[in-house]
Image (cartoon, rainbow, N blue to C red; front, side, top):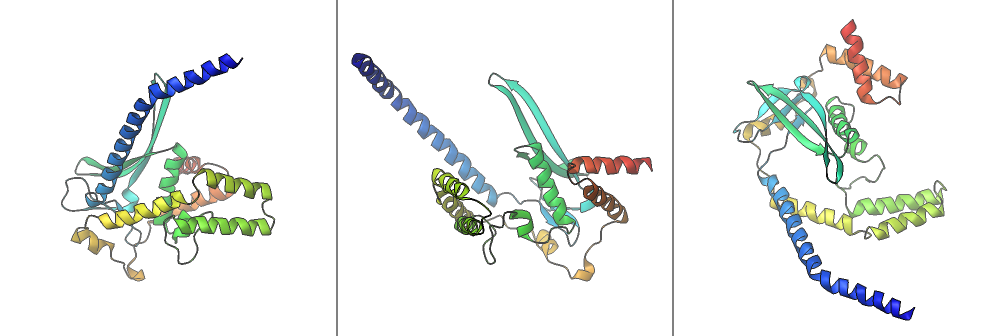
Length: 274
């Protein structure tokens, strides 16, 4: 019995010394690739002007690659879509999801697309934009902070304040007996396993670095377009949009558990029949 254990021990030691060089090389290679992608993503802030939404004007501003002047499009003429791709590889079935939006300009489709983790997340991204443009969401906390982790005066991004607020909220819920001690115990276990406040500190460090890198300057036309307007000059939604939105809200209230995509499809089906 002792000889078998000794043989196993020596076999494990032998595997370790045979593989550690390859493991170190792979770790260094993976770290290099990660840092390369990370630096490239940060450099995009100095090269790319993101799509901007102006709900006072009810317009969207695109800055296509290679363009010298921005393109402004009415909000209600914008198209949005969700894509789903599926393929088989030697490792199994791979699914990819994405969300895009755009409009036709001089015979070409000007669009913005990005990957999402699921169809539901892609739809949620569009719903966040749509809710903002339709004056249904008027503050960041409604959109970004459904768990109430932002206190007045906190910066809008996640960070150490987010962790502290979550811990304070946990202790409050524990005192008020909303949760039990077992829940609190596993809350601490989870955050210990995720390196306590290290993820929050990394987020704050990255935000400071992005601010140090800077962003690409907006063209004068976009700067003027982004200036706020007096309330009497705010654009109004069309009568058709108001009519369809009222039907959507009525169906949502009547069938609260129905997915929003099915609600929209039902409204359009009924509207096409009339």
